[in-house]
Image 1 (tube, rainbow, N blue to C red):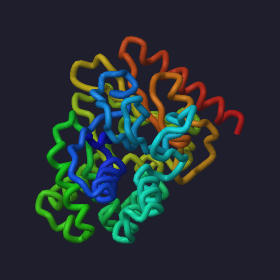
Image 2: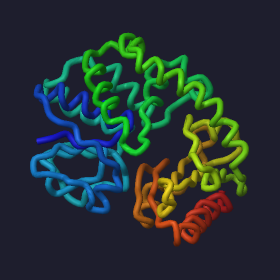
Image 3: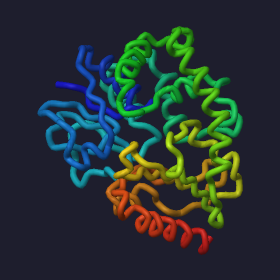
Image 4: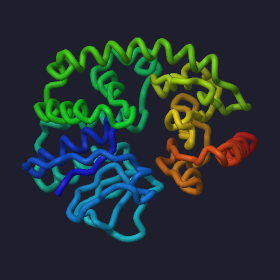
Length: 299
């Protein structure tokens, strides 16, 4: 039995809560949604899956993505909720297997994963402990597995101040602050406005910049949705696409998760992603942009 979850902040908190609620030690297997959707993930009988698509080998499954809604009841919990961690927190508190010690962590995970943020939280995440910590969780080829596991261990102690004072965490937070400044410049240089849709295309860059994914909505405040395009790796065989509703200008009516499920991806109503073969990527990107623009034109 393992915990199988996604390498983002919600996934990390899912692991924290599951380990605490089940009162046991289990290995954590980190995978991306596409790994399950493509069948490449090694999901074993008895695994507990969280924040990922369902798999028939799962003993328990917890998820909140609209594109993953099950056709029949499955063991665990599914709901269209702010975060998968919040679902797990509620589920196990109702069974009296979690107390109030993780309320603050679960509440902040809801805020972060649902992007229920203020402009100040986007512009100055370093002033908000859980937000800046969440930004240190970056998947760059699964090289950070030791860090994700350490975060799970530290967050189980329930002291955010102590976590942030850890030398490695502190260094990563400082790096994130620097990255965010540079990311803003890259966004301005590589973003085109198509009506009320911002399209950021990083395919011309050798190294894809990382940074605050919500910063685009602050920089391009009139847009209602964003599209970010980049190559998956240096081989350039696959293109990663991210689409999201503006968190400050909520007028996009397209259900992003459902739309991207038609292209092999998925996500929430307000945000999602997909992986495309590079050869046919632009044709599919154009179709996605047309769907978004049709929504805009009818607004």
